[in-house]
Structures are given as structure tokens and as C-alpha cells.
Length: 210
Image (cartoon, rainbow, N blue to C red; front, side, top):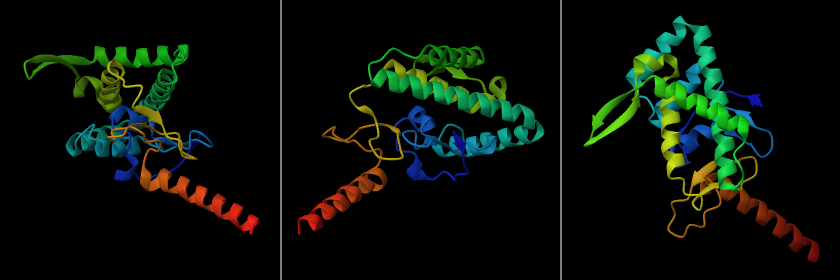
């Protein structure tokens, strides 16, 4: 997988769930995968835009990463590995296939690490298990994504959660449209590209006939 530099923008968040958007930090999975998480700072950039951490927490993590670059690199490595396990598990569930053993074991390990660093909080009349920023340290963005992914897995709508059919994409998304027939992650990108390709092919056939 090629690691490339990419500045995250709002149109990169089309999954409909933070765990899906995290899996989508790799693009062109169906052709030549490109990893957009080229540094720990980039992970924080994604986490801020995804609403995983706020600006103040991200700044504190950035400072910690600058003081401990080796630990930051290790945290980034764990995030990338867990992201791939998350993606593989989601794809297998959507295809109604057995979950890959390695992916299942890796994600379980990430969940256990996150749980061991979490604590119970009272919220809205319920007790919730939430990551503790001090205990999670540089792994806080990953721990938060893992907890969000567990919630997603618990109620995954396999009818509405899909893999984009666009070329050079492979992103995951939840179809929240009324008709439930969406096949592209985003009409403005993959949808328009697919329409342009179909139009060009039709025009080519028309010219051949004439």
C-alpha cells in the first residue's frame, strides 16, 4: 500500500459513521490502495475533522507526539493496523462471509487495550464505558474509534451499509437515502465519474454506428 500526503477536507467524510470514515482513510482499495495517514499529525488532523477529538485535546496530543516521536510512530502503526482489521471485518460481514481470523484477533486486541484504559461514566441515566484521555495517551484517537466501531458492529445494518461501486474507490458508506438505492459513496465524486464514463461509452458506440 502506498502512503501519500493528503489534506483532509469535509468531502472525505461520507461514510455516515466515524468507524467507516476511519476505514476510508485508505482510498482506491479496489485498484491501487493509497494510505492517507502519512504521520501521527495527519491522524490528529483526521480525528479533529471527524469529531473524534476537539482542538484542545488534539493540541495536547500533538505536543506529546513531538516530545515522544518514537511512541507517536508506534501509535500510528497500531492505528493503521487496526484500521485494516476494521475494514476487513466490515467487508466480510457485508458479504456474509466468515470474519478473517487475523482481523478478528487484531481488532479484539485493540478493543481489549481500549477497554483496559477506559472508565465508567454516568450519562443520561446510563453508565457508559469511555476511554480515559490520560490512560490512552497517544492512542486516544484509536481508542475512541474502536469504541465507536463496537457500537456500529452491534447494530450493523447490512442492507444499508455498502461498498462504493466507483472506480478507484472502495469506500464504505451507510445509505441514508429515502429510496435506499445509493451505490456510490458520494454522487459529487464517484457518482458523477461513473455517469461521465457511461456517457463517453455511449457516445463512442453512437459514433461507431453512424
